[in-house]
Image (cartoon, rainbow, N blue to C red; front, side):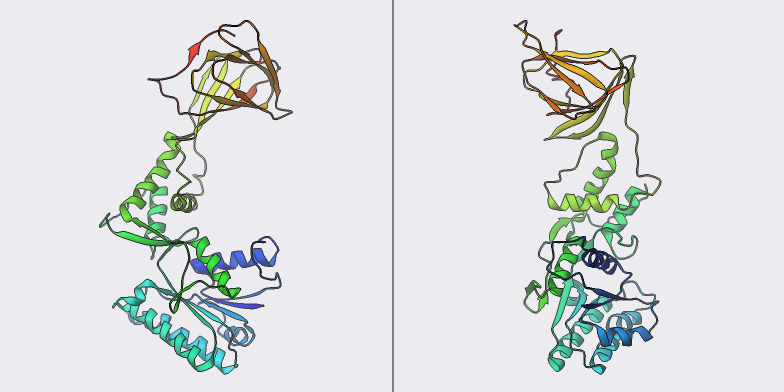
Length: 380
């Protein structure tokens, strides 16, 4: 299958090509497509002569090329209508009636230069379909967000993510404005569904199944919370689909010299204790380092429960019920990764039996509250 993609270097084009290459290389196995794909990428700097070759051989066309921020309003019509006309003329010249998908916008329903040009491109495609019998898919995309989208261009989400990640100012004219958004992975999934002949439609138009409606103010608030999570260690609520997608998008705009961030290590002669991640409903994860011969702990909890995982070194975790003398021992080692549950009602400690530092990953089911620590000292 030969696939022509115009606007190949644009936001949607880059993501679509990346996934098609995954299919071609056998890395994406969730689709029904054969791996025998040939991608014809076409963009503004491509040799125009190649358009004839591609138009002659294409089995499917993704027409993603368009103009969003021209210097002159006339360029809207030239880019969103003129090139569409050229493309269709080429296909018709070679008698190629392969299916065509066109990237339009919800603004095609509005009376502005951009919307008018998008509407004209749509009508051109519908007329072409009536004339040639070719199958056409017209998608009026709302705001599309995700990785590789150009900031400070035509995407508020991309601009907010980029600027907040780089500690730059942002401008929000009306935080109460509700935005309808679609995530780039959902868009690509739908485009490949169209390629497979399984497009989702609503009336005459194709439609991405999953949309998200949220106010501009809420979007900004969440992105700022992502930035602040490096300090308060709070993991976003990934049970919310939009938050999960927005956080992934935000990370893609981190400055390349800012992927890492420091944690606060609480150190003493015994070793160190460092909080790593926190979640209001999933507790927190910390890293404990014990020096050789050091014993830590010797306390018990009413309700707070933990899991210990020694990943380096060797030691022993001991347990005893407060009113009993019997001591239970679990020997642990980084050579055999094994999680040890710390049940409530048992005083417990952990001792480094090795000659090197012992590193333990510790999870506790609640974030530490100094007002209600639920931790009571008692020697094992």
